[in-house]
Image 1 (tube, rainbow, N blue to C red):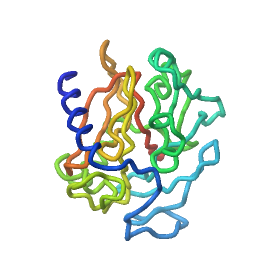
Image 2: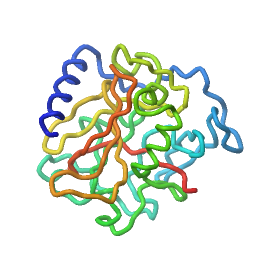
Image 3: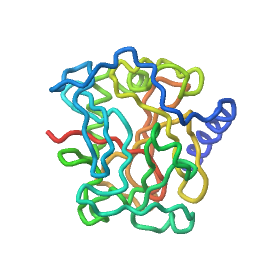
Image 4: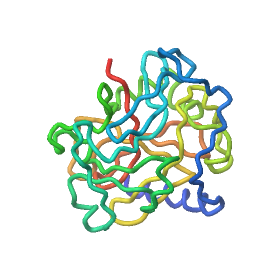
Length: 248
């Protein structure tokens, strides 16, 4: 698995070198509508706000209601502070931490923040919730409900990704954003040092109660040269994006 991840990362780094990193929020969504008073399949619903005051679009996809933007909070929903950790040695071993991609705040508005696993694992963080009240970190099963509603692993990625090549690298294969999920390539922070994947890969934590000695929970990732949805095991010290799902 580790060898496979290194190969994927190497391919992405080559792709990234061909495109200037984008930090300016832009959209190619022709279906964007004003917020409505309720959630309707196929249009954005009412915005929600986190404890820091950040506003997020939401969208109903099938039976689920998702945030249509990556999380940006610096606090749990009970206002407990999550530290911003930029020192690599501290990042590896700290229990709770977030950071910007490349530790540069200009990435925040478009891509949100990157969080390590200990920040969102309730068995470690004293049962705290990083998502707004009434929302939660989706499980791998809940992600698969979304993916299956959009046609399965082989085609759902294209329906989730923001269309066009403003923020994604070419060819951004099969991207239509027909779901309005608006998945963006925010990259990730490595478990040890360095960052990879911005403009080429988006990777999100999922909750899974199974924990091995070497890897932590499953993550979902999408890439610019495929319309598929991929799954992989991620180290707990990696920094990935977070999308929240509304409680049923």
